[in-house]
Length: 129
Image (cartoon, rainbow, N blue to C red; front, side):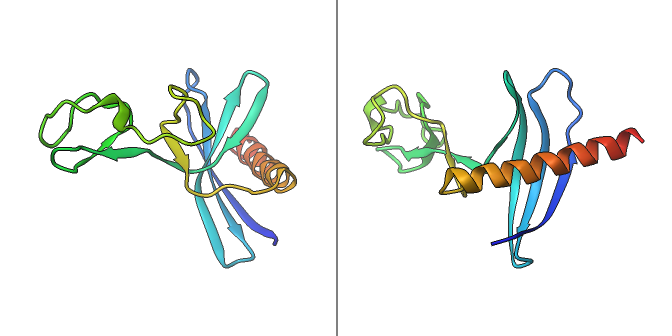
């Protein structure tokens, strides 16, 4: 599989950690959008596109965001134990987001991150010039 295109949209917010969004095309036939370029404590890294985890209200079945106390549809109190849990995670360490797409191997993650960060640097330098 080959990364055939990387497009970068820079975000101008000096106080925020989000630096840009990337759109990556694979083999000119498959696109992954909304890969985030984030400034961490040890430098830049990428975060894959994700969505917020939701769980249904036991009263009306409306899907509410994880850790909500009340249903956004019927205002019923949501039970704490109704939150979905992963088998490998202890209670209380639940993630509020779940990746939509992500690399399976560390080798591919490193390759993807390298290509996205190179494109980010090029776009940043292009705007400075």
